[in-house]
Image (cartoon, rainbow, N blue to C red):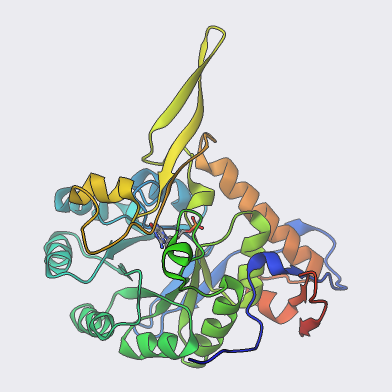
Length: 347
Ligand code: 5GP
């Protein structure tokens, strides 16, 4: 047994210190980014936000709505091959990742879809990206798809970020346990504070010209700003995009006088009892559920939330004088705000 003593931080443990700048308005900042993927040499530009590959938010309607603002979606893996073929033939699939796990049937389905509708963005997603089988899957997928951008995860440390990039990932998905409907930390005691995970994995990835996607744990727009400030190239959101018209969740209505009003929508983790019952007929005997089911407020079309998120990031950039989103990590100084921690670190 060994104890690591350096503090590891979550979004709630820090704030971003304001900095002097010549910027006069948030209208002058640019929240978009352009990336060249390390293994393909292809480029992507847009607002680097990705809806999580959870079946409530990683939907085709979400992909269409977010594309209008340059954001992305990792589609959930429970769509049928026929639905995926039809979707990936549409131009509206431009910013969508095809998500899959590591089973042979996942791979066969991907190949079948790809034969009919070429896939250019792949999200290889497992709860624990630390297994040799996962690294082998990333390698095999890179060999089969030399021209596709591959996002792979999840991991939380620099060593494994490097391993996945060297195996063929362009983007490493970072986060174990921070999700809003995740119970991994409670069920297993395993996890890593998300802000530190992003800082450490981004440092490792950028050294190899790879990218990271901070996945999970954002609960307010300011958390997105902190994630970008910490070095996240992309940020993935589940809970913050739940409760919208584009989601595939059950809406709960209340009778208000003569009117039936939508008030809430179900949202659940992909390894919750709800998801396992829906797709596998229940929780397998050898595993415990590591996700929960909640109701989030119904919030109408996702566009309003997306604009609010972009507005929060834009405003954060103005406070620290970052004209382009790319400059955020350089301009970010985090202040620790935990009760016993008042040290300033960063630039
Ligand atoms: P959120 O934005 O809701 O905080 O986090 C979304 C992320 O939570 C997802 O992208 C995924 O990585 C993670 N997640 C989704 N469902 C589950 C689950 O059932 N268990 C665990 N451990 N993580 C989950």
